[in-house]
Length: 149
Ligand SMILES: [Zn+2]
Image 1 (cartoon, helix red, strand yellow):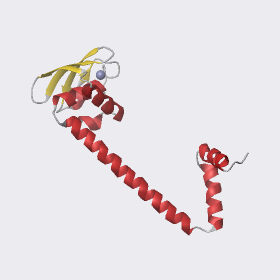
Image 2: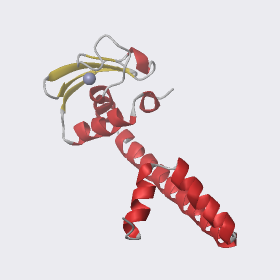
Image 3: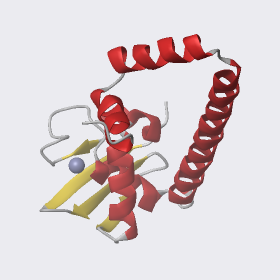
Image 4: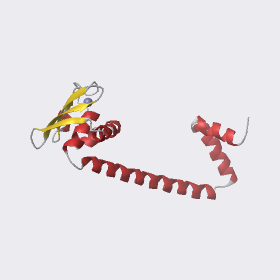
C-alpha cells in the first residue's frame, strides 16, 4: 500500500503544506527506498522514511513517536524526497473532488425529478418524515424560512 493511502487526509494536507513552506530542511537519501530528514514544526523532528515499507517510517513528534502512524512530517519528507508526488497528490485530490461534485449534482437532479412526480399526499408524508428523522436544522430552517414562530 502506498504511503499516502496509509496516512489520514489531515496528515496528507498538512504534510503538503509543510512541504510547500519548505519545512523539510534536510533530506538524506540512504538508498532507493529509505530517506532521513529534519522537519521544522513546533520543534525540529527527525524523520525516517521507508517507501517500500511505509509503516516502518518513524518520526519523533508526539503523534507518531512509538506508534506506526504516518504523520505530516513523514508525508512532507515523502513529497520532498520524491519529485512530482506532491503534484500527483494534488491532481488526484482535484479529480476526486470533481467526481464527487458530479455525483452530488446527479443525485440532486434525480431527487428533483422524483419530487416532481410525487402526489400531494406523498409530499406531505415525505416532509413529515424528514422532520421526524432528519437533522434538527432542517426543521429550524423550514420554520425560519417560512416565518413560523
Ligand atoms: Zn511527525
